[in-house]
Length: 163
Image (cartoon, rainbow, N blue to C red; front, side, top):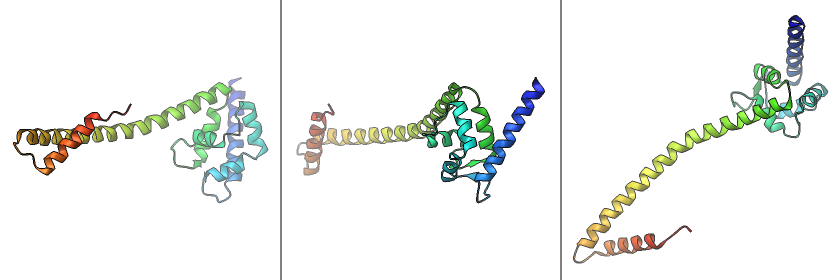
């Protein structure tokens, strides 16, 4: 039984490799989204997707699932291994797509959080600077025109509410 499963898996892998090479018209060793869209017209891939209950309506999602390194293209290893991973129930595909989406969100948050932290620190610094200037202006007997402008801005800022 194990030998039969291994033979089936190897045969399936060979079919996917052959399919990839046929679609890779420029022999670059990678499929772009345009080439991948052509591949989705191939009857063999259509049958494969039907068996997995994968909708070819969302080509982009399937492409992103197979593009493990997020390079914008799928190499033969990504294609064959990705298709092999998607074998099984549609539930496997759903989990794989959710995993991709989670990695995407995590990657963007990891870049966004330090940026927002730096922006908040900068804003805090500006608020402290202006608070010192306002305090100095309030302590002087005759506030200068600049100090009066700062007082006016501070008053406007305190009165403003985002709600």
